[in-house]
Amino acid sequence: MKSIFLRQALLFLFFISCSLSSSLLLAKTFTFTAIPDQDQTRLKQRFNQVAKYLETELNVQVQYIPVKSYSAAITAFRNDQVQLAWFGGLSGVQARRLVPGSKAIAQGEEDQFFKTYIIANTQTGLIKAQTLPTNTAKLTFSFGAKGSTSGRLMPEYYLQKHYGDLSKNIFKRIGFSGDHSRTIALVQSGAYDLGAVNYKVWEQELANNSIDLNNIDVIWESPNYPDYQWTIRGDTDKYWGSGFSNKVQLALLSIIDPVLLNAFPRTKFVQAKSEDYKVILDTAKSIGLID
Image (cartoon, rainbow, N blue to C red; front, side, top):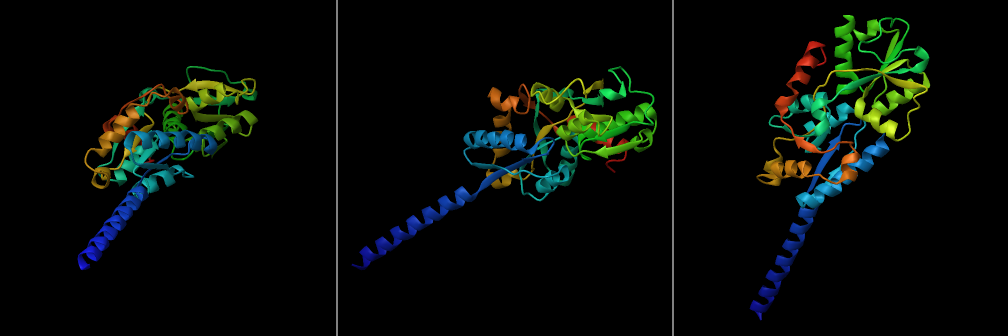
């Protein structure tokens, strides 16, 4: 009789153990974030799709965690609140410097040859040219977020290179909109005369009929530079198992769903290395955004 009770007790403990193990497994969630470079509604739609895709490919729970600023994305990555992030060139460099061993693993095909558009309200009378306008003392200018590569770092660099002075001394007034969609809206409304935007966001807004070319247009485009990339923490394999980082990279490189790609918008994802972004680090140092 005792042996029967003992056997039943052991079976009960076994099932409890299995149940707890399953619960713990379900509670373990791979998390990622992205810089808030445009309208939050579009970002949630895009990255919730990515989360569903990664869940299928990685066979783990995956969650997208939205943030309100570029610095918040970097902080979440540094504090291990997220293990993966879709960063811009500058924010990726900053994040990888804070988390030893972290690395860039994938980028859009277009991110190898990215560029900034300088846009202008048509009331300024400015038209597209090979060089930036000469008479800027009476003009106002809006950057995007302060931590943006295409909306702050690179346009600031090219403005300084062209005019030989800081942007705050070049224009009557400068501002920071926070994201590219907002920059377009501000310049289109006439709140600012000029602005610097991510060329991909411009093309997407144009395709969505959110831009009236009677009120706003591109007047200058920058040379190419590397920009957005997926960056993963260096300790990911420690918590998720050997080779998990490679599995994440392969999943990202294997995205072929046109709906998902168009949401970025990118034609495909290709392999990236942290070394690809040395030019971004050097540029940030040269204009004092990074020590």
